[in-house]
Length: 127
Image 1: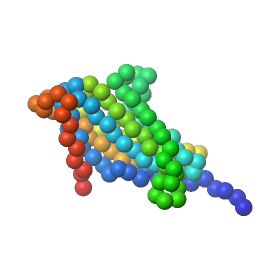
Image 2 (image 1 turned 180 degrees about the vertical axis):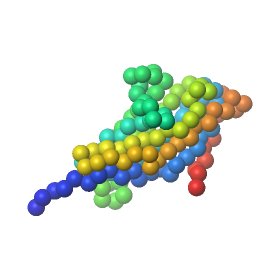
Image 3 (image 1 turned 60 degrees about the vertical axis):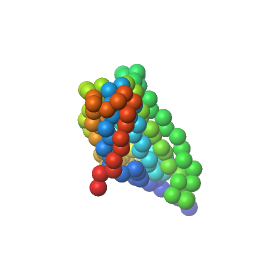
């Protein structure tokens, strides 16, 4: 019996818009499945994001066993601390493994809102 690899599939959450105040915190979640489990990368526009280049970024990836009842998934959380006006824009996640790559199926829009009290955050789902 041979085992074939399955390309990654981004499962959620839905595309979202976030409004974050000056010096607030924004967190984006991307969940993907595949066999083998994929690696998730984050982008702002077309530029890859890495804590190595911006110390205000944190990226955590964990394996979620039994996601969707039978399969496992990778959950990646991108957190951006001390949000500035220049951080506004579109963020996306890309999942890849040896069987393929899925990109830009999950997109997040970050809005900078200087009038909101520091630390304030609102979140809405786009339809």
